[in-house]
Image (cartoon, rainbow, N blue to C red):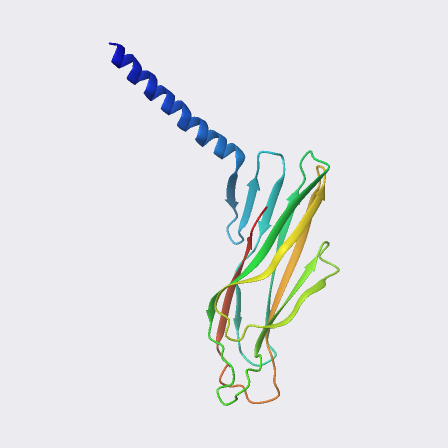
Length: 194
């Protein structure tokens, strides 16, 4: 009888411990995904701060002719908590899903044919160029394009960083038919949240 009570108490203690850990973990960090065509991720911490990413759709560029470009815009917003100032540190990754572009096979120089530029704004009107004409001609995989970007917001307010990425198939004033009709497809991720 005494062994049964000890066993029952042990099972109850373990159950309470597991439920407490799960409940505390969920209360400390929960993420949810909303939307059909655009990806929005909300992260809520144990304080009232909340950071939201709206990274949009994939950027697809089909190179019909040199000079053709494609653009993708997205945003990162931080809702302040009850502290004087709330801060979030984040980065942006360019994840290349498909890249069929190549450098000129008849040249010994790797002249960039596909480049991207990144712009940032706090109001969607005044844009600051953060990166200009970065070579992505044969870029593959995941690439860190923005690191350690600090977003700060006052108490109980929302501050938003707006981002725009433009990818261009450059015109090199020569025949470039080896890249015409090729495709580039990439997505962007917000990473390293602190």
